[in-house]
Image (cartoon, rainbow, N blue to C red):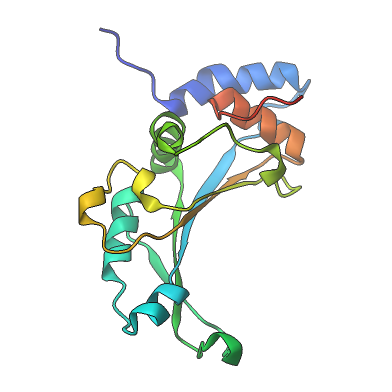
Length: 186
């Protein structure tokens, strides 16, 4: 059985040369590429609903999903309507680069998206205008590292894919070439 080529190698050997030709770019450095992937989880409502400040199970889930320990983001301002004080933990984030980024993206495309209930493809409206793409999951149990039997409380996960593309069309072509399951346009 042949050894499957990982996504990082495929991007360098197949996808970038093809994009260079399709986008009519003369310089290889102008071809859109991935910069980083940022995975976020908001924990503000989780800590308020529980009444305690223990969110270690979410930290463990994020570490299992991404392969990296998350950073705890704290509130910079007090907001009385949301009962948030300065220094309260409000979120967790992980920034992936290099090999871990490509491994996570490969898992996202081939394992996670097919596991999402009623999945009919990704919307093209989730681009931000600068070539970055965002996708959110309502439940973190779509990731294969999380056992549904061990879940205490469900939480969402936000994944932001940052590219070097100048506009949405170039970023779309890059992600589509990587195998992102976008909805077909009518």
